[in-house]
Image (cartoon, rainbow, N blue to C red):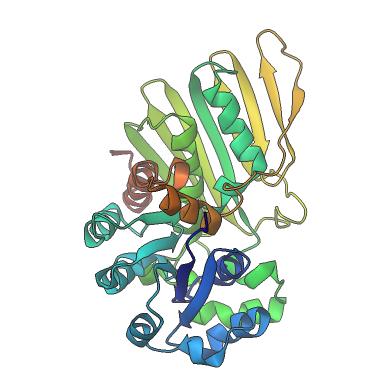
Length: 357
């Protein structure tokens, strides 16, 4: 049986991950990339050049893009503070939406995004770490009961900073980073900038996945206050659950990027349960496990995920083909709990007090 061809458009290039997502789209055998759109034409040039996108499929008006290209699925990569706005703009066109992380800049905005979608259309939030073999293998082991009931999750997440990388992880120079900082939404509080909003959702959302969907009762957060910046570059968040504490740390300014050379401390997770522990670090091809029966740490292979779990475009289209809702961190229930924790952390950092969910 011949599979459906899905028409995809990419709209709003605020986040540099758009280039990576468009590449996943053009490489998928069931996809026709029918259009891209951004109000700033220069931001689309890299994708046009690298992916060979015809000029008649490049738009500066999202309405023209949607009306002329008639996509089935829209990939959105706006600034964190504009996720709700952009879902409301595209949802009336009857499209499915793949939103690049984070879910939103606030829980209220996340809920408006869900309400804006038609009941028969899918909204999926992409958390890139869901497609990393080590993190998927850790979840498989947790689900299988290898370490008993999960009690604690530690996450350290970050990189050298969001302006050091372009599409396909192309490395920028220090001069390019310095020139871009004053104009980048990543460094503007009003647009949802800062390491906490950029990276905390990774830890809280995958952490909720490992916790089986359980919510904490309260959150305490501390952020740094860099001189000359209006947003944080470092945050430490502690979440209290009825069964224990978990910690989530975000950092712009790691010594190296974890996808090239793991910095110290290493980016990734440590999960502790009643019967053992698992460490699963970003991009490793293994996880390390301790159990009561075998306390000496052992490496367990974590091979690359197989289809349809290799990337968000592949997974979303598989869900649409099967008529099923996305599962795991990219699902709305898990992402919403992750957003609740982020919201509480923002309030805690601002008030310098512990906040109840």
